[in-house]
Image (cartoon, rainbow, N blue to C red):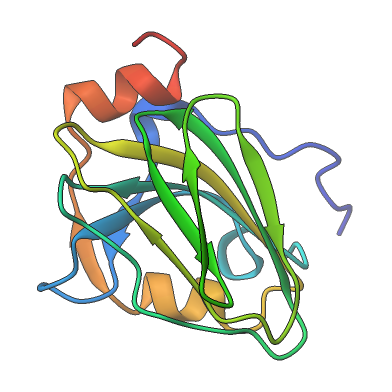
Length: 143
């Protein structure tokens, strides 16, 4: 069987998940090892107003965020920085980090983890979620 040279996604057809029902952020899956056989996970991570990731670290993976829309704060090893559209940052393995959105609107980040380090399994093992029209518009670059 021949492998497919290009895998494509349409913003309106993306699957979305919350890791748990109580979470304040959710993920629109672009590419990941489970669905696409790639070695990384790429998602649009959407933070509700008041939302944040729990403090976390990765053993081997690097995690990159690129802010598409909204504003918030990124903290790495206790140092906090404001973030907004066009900002990008990389978190190295072993660095404890938090991304938070004080609001009032949503914060949208293109988030890449490489290697996957169980990220896709964590996301896809969560609660299926529905993207709003606003979410799809931001993903399409129409804010």
